[in-house]
Amino acid sequence: MRVKFNGIKKQQARRGGCTSCGGRRTSTYAFEREKVIFFPTGVRKLFVAGKTYEVTDEDGLFLLAQGYDLNGQKVYMFEQVS
Image (tube, rainbow, N blue to C red; front, side, top):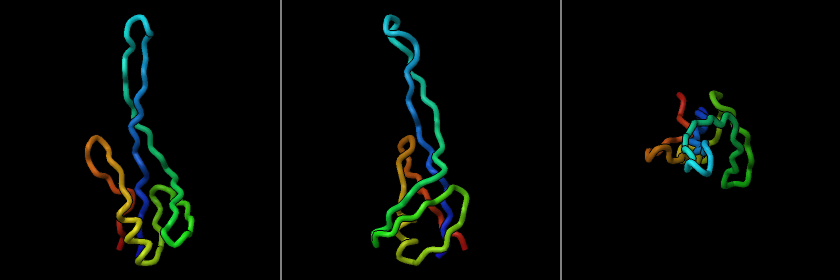
């Protein structure tokens, strides 16, 4: 199975202003381009965003299930490539 790592988009909250005026909260997005994944078999592998990797079917199904929440929506880190 071939999978492509899409990267991880994170929302980071920052506070600005001063303590006397109550502060102002802003948020920005950061993009994580590399991720180390530990497979259930114990194997460790580094994935880089935008690259395609050949993995076993079992490991591919594990990777396709990996996701995170971004603004209340489920986003998956990997997609299957034909």
